[in-house]
Image (cartoon, rainbow, N blue to C red):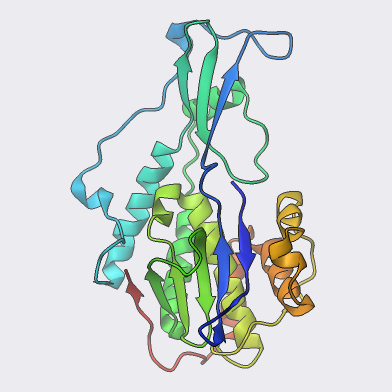
Length: 273
């Protein structure tokens, strides 16, 4: 999947948007026992991801809901945990003896081999750090007076957007279905933009770079070369480059909010959907 952000004028003011083409959400591989790959194991040794039917409260979805209470953050995190299980590699023996592996992938992930898929299934990642970061960021944004919402965004492929004029951070309603990793990256990216606004003079100011330095990873550099960035102002490119360079540091977004946004929120924010 590719993640892109845009900074277009909308309705007379500016919204900072994070865009994601959703078509490539899953990667399917057919791995053979050729010289380039280890021989496929027998069907009895091919692990499969367990398919769980979660209780109704785990299936919580923000789409089409009214205001979400702070206590419902727990439901969001449990939905993310279940989505992480759904995103584990799935293997299927093909009639010709090959093993097909389907897995959720993010930009910059290393190539997926059958051995790697089997190891993930034997020792599934827990993504607890990501969910802890999500909880902390949502709580801090609320205290600052930022309204976090799940709603249909202006751009059809957007995953998140920061609207400083309205102090509103909006997330795509089906973003929880993409798992904790992507949710944490998007939320942290937008939190960095919130901190950039605070550093520019307040939550309702246009973001400006914080001078963090660093360089985005190769996957993000490729996105920044897209015309959606290349043809925009140097100021927009600067704030996006900085956010992309640091979005993977899940402790940084919270630190930047604490450093630059003290006293920025007049009223507590809320979560809504």
